[in-house]
Amino acid sequence: MIKANLIWANESNKVETLEDSDYLLILTTPELLASQLFHFSSPAKTYIEQVFDDEDFAGNKGECVFVQGLKAFKTSYIPVTENSGKNKISQQLADVKRVLFYGVDFALFEASDAPNVPSRASTLSKTNDPSTVNRSSYASDSNSAFYSKSTSDLKQTNAPAFRYLEQQFDALFKKLKSVSVTLEKLSFMALSTAETASGDPVNTIASHSQFLSALLRSYFKHGYHFKGYKTNNTPASCSQRRNVNNDSNNAAIDQAIDIGGTLSLALDAKHFNTAQKRLVSHTISYETALNDAMTWAKDLAHMPANLCTPNYLAEQAQHLAQTFNTVSCDILNESALKQLGMNGYLAVNAGSQFAATMPILRYTAKGLENSPPVVLIGKGVTFDSGGITLKRSPDMRHMIYDMAGAGCVLGVIQAVATLGLNINIIGIVASADNAIDGKAYRPGDIITMHSGKTVEVMSTDAEGRMLMADAISYAKQFSPSVIIDIATLTGAAISALGHKATALFSNAPALENALVEAGEQANDRCWPFPLWPEYQDAITSQHADMMNTGINSPGAISAGCFLSRFADGTPWAHLDAAGTAFTYTKSLSATGRPIPLLLSYLSSCAIKNNQ
Image 1: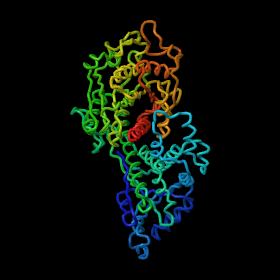
Image 2 (image 1 turned 135 degrees about the vertical axis):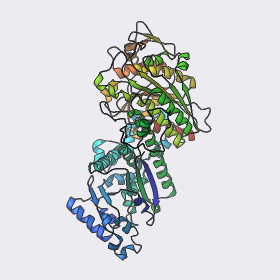
Image 3 (image 1 turned 180 degrees about the vertical axis):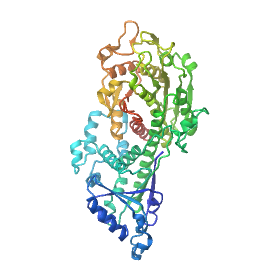
Image 4 (image 1 turned 60 degrees about the vertical axis):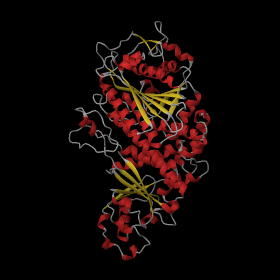
């Protein structure tokens, strides 16, 4: 697990950042370069300037230079005058082994001082009711609010600043990897004198929450690594390790948890007031909780189906409840599901050697015990063979990712509990295994669902909607404020949106608008699709209330129409994350999306509850 470490530093303790770091990363510009070099000892400065000349480095945007060998400048080589107090950290900087200078677009940071550029916290706090945002007005307002008039690149991309910032930091960390820099022990330090403090990029980034969020999110994303199951791996010792049943697979499961590293961020304490320090700490806490959630979801998604079974997901849900006193968990086994009439749910799992489960997690905020919850439902098909409607074998190995929606729900509830958000949530992990044997359900079967509605099975590979429909129907007993389901449901969603945006379907315009806004805020975008009555005709059946696939219809919309019939009058949204939760045909490609979108939405709801 990688993490961020914040140090409020002055000149005397700033060196703590360097003691456990493999690399010091200095963000710079052509104008700032000279003042930043002022902190190095004279021999080190001369050496660095020579490297700059050799590499033709001037601190321009996107330029990167890697300076090694500073450790050679021992204390004896540093003039006594440089230790007189004017430059207290020069000796320690001279002892650093590796320093990376990276040129940034400082106009981007200057734009943050323009009016109407909100942080995530200020933007959300202004939204009294996150469910009543008008999507069309938000789309224009957000671009103007985040728009940088002094940055030409922003004008060319017409993108909100957070998205642009994350792209720039993505380029930075990709550059570091290209020069074989690991991200395990990396430190950012503000090298500011009294005269240049306001112009130091590290201080400026930390002063604005969307800048710091973009930096941390990009670092976490590029620092993630799934360790896997090779026998020469040493089992990791990690605080995030979750206990599972003591079976023969434990050693392999333990090895899947990665140790990772730390990003140290040293900021000049004298340049931040109390409110700014609180905002920095809050932003780091938020992004850390988000990263922990996404890391867990990705690790679960990367696990093979013989290890990550429906029962394993149930155990993970139970462990989550044991970790937080605000979370409780009930497990519905196959016997309970059968008594409830969850026949569509059980049909999906009928051909499997593994038993279906349905963990139900409850996160309850203090004082909101009687408030209606937000229900999150995650599709947890631990392996999707397609059933009798068999998938094409070359791509079938990627169907371990068909439980990414369930991993998303587990991760979101962990993040919400970590942050202590003021909101009630019920998370349902709809978990099954779509396999084949003589008991498997068949095309042409008529199934009576939990709601009492009947479904004619046209394709056993349209299993996710059968699972989710029963879960949605069951969830209405909780009298939720909204139901949101997350599923890797259709290849048609990939055809429509690729891997850039999650497909969104909803029967409630206010909820739809709120999710679109949350996705924009989190740089985890979704895009709404219609559920017009005309599209419902495609799933009309001659033998039952509906078919589970449409005829001559857009597949993602047909799936949305099917699920909408089980939500009835409850405000409901369906997030088809088939293109965003993982990258199809690529191994180890789970992304953890749409956790950022959902945490952004839930945070805005919590802010509303606080008012």
